[in-house]
Image 1 (tube, rainbow over the protein chains, first blue to last red):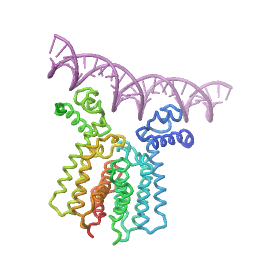
Image 2: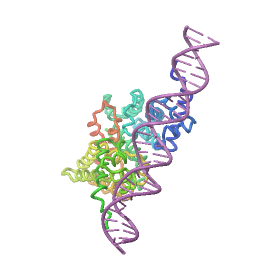
Image 3: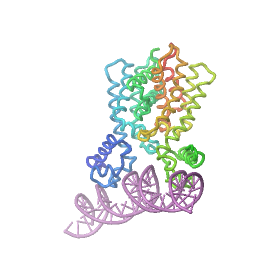
Image 4: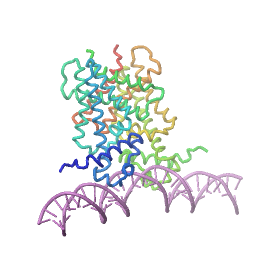
Length: 199
Length: 199
DNA sequence: CTGTACAGGTTAACGGTGTTAACCTCTATT
DNA sequence: AATAGAGGTTAACACCGTTAACCTGTACAG
């Protein structure tokens, strides 16, 4: 008997409600009791479907990673030159973060403590997104074929820069005098240029 | 009568203990009751010296900003060429983050909620660090004098990239196959190069 | 059929959190 | 000598994640 017996009922309702709470009340407001009362169950019933709050978060994170992955993939296969495509991928990443700040927050800005037991299989899923960036870099690269290792580190560097911009903006750490759109453009441009493709 | 009457006693003890807790037990472990019991006072006594937990955090953040500022300043006045000096400043920023992860966490990775009422005067203090980066960029810049506005946005872009690297490393989000040192070098190099000084 | 195992809920409780209200006590000033 | 206030206290409120113990219906074995 597959464990999917309850996948269509309470488990999904919990997940959907949790997402809704995070999205329109913020991560701080996400509590077991709140979720439970929103769906008309007791708080402890959640533990019948998730190991604990962290496991619930991990499930939300994975959902977010999939959504992000689709957006990146779409950008990566847009009808453009390879360099512009890489740029589009970067823009898509940032756009996702700025459009879904609460989601981005739990995906990438959670305290390390919560990620201690992030399941490897979900970690692998998340890594695919990095690989999309990596492929875009390789395609845009002129100087021959870099090793997989080299590509991974380049992609991670690009990711770090993009994440820095998104997370600072989301956390309202950016000087109010700065135009957000221009900052994003700059970061993308500088990041892509930093890879120095044009010979 | 100056408000510094208690600055040398309990207020300082609270701050020192709070810092100690954060540094060697992590942000998660920082609670009013824990601080209080560590110094042998009741939890509510803290409220006689700080408006609340957030105010306490803000004080810690400011301390951290000052420490970071000193390190950046030192790097910015090292005996090197301007471009290398900028690089040193970037390295100093990252080094600070990696050496003081718990401190960095409360300084730059706190949930936005906690920063809602961050006092403007402390915000201004924090901005000085950005100005150090800005000056280093200007000195390293070849293409004439950019406007203050332009400089601010460039500095913010650089900051974002550095912060991205630091925060992902601290949060253990980086693939274990990646050499941390090399990643840092790459990010610094790409970030500086992204500014494209060499014509 | 009857008995039983078990899935899927429940309530009560534990030990924690930030914060507020009410109170106490000592010191300094009028 | 009376009083105001600084600097503490305890008790309590409303939350939090999580566990233990219990209940209830349904499916399946003898």
